[in-house]
Length: 182
Length: 125
Image 1 (cartoon, one colour):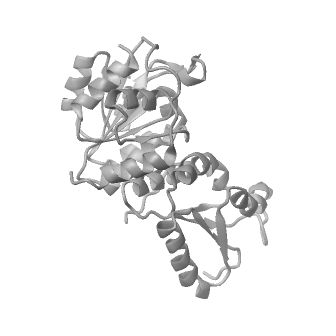
Image 2 (cartoon, each protein chain N blue to C red):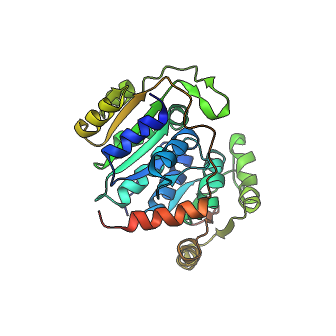
Image 3 (cartoon, rainbow over the protein chains, first blue to last red):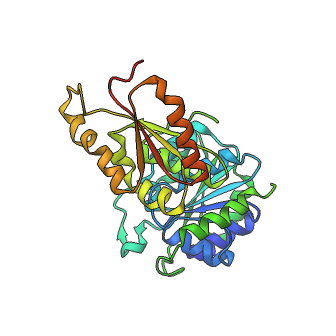
């Protein structure tokens, strides 16, 4: 599985959710999988995508919210796992795309354990690991919210280099999407 | 609006950006030394996306400071905000708070600006 196939499965399991994607691979994959849908794509601010998704989820508790995160991103904003466990938004799922590398800066290894689901469980969050599209669909249907789904993949080929993100365009499109009824 | 106590100051900026992105009106509070932690979230999320909110900073490292570790980020806070193009307004008297906050809220939510309100040392309790 590659990240594009993983994010296609996430989107298929939550087609009406508000999606927030961290910079780099997660944003490139979500754009490609959704036909550049009106999601909140990060052009920078590494480490803040999960907490931004928590802010979205708390403002729109009537909508499903999915944070699609790189593994390095999740490490950089690791405190937000604690915030997720403390705030416990009942409409938010964090999906960590886990290949153990900083992909968009050249593929350097993370150099740390990639125990995202285990850490989430210790914090009292529902968590699971999935390594193919069928498991992603099953776990997204099964996991309570807030929850964390660690998606393991080893094909680091798609979706390619870091995408161009035009922040005002992203903002306007996402504001419209977030204002729509749930 | 719920009060959320988060783990770092850049988390506060990220939360506010998401809350704002979904149509909310957030307010962020932290000590000026946390501005250092928050710079990247401000510079690569709040500002380029136009997520405006008031940012209330309690000042350390200036008049009356006894802790050397508070001084470098304290004395440079206003200059860092200015370099980022963020307007900041100092509050030294309680009587001024309501007007400054009301004006900052307009700038933040209507004009879509990050606006800093600096609570200066000596502000009455």
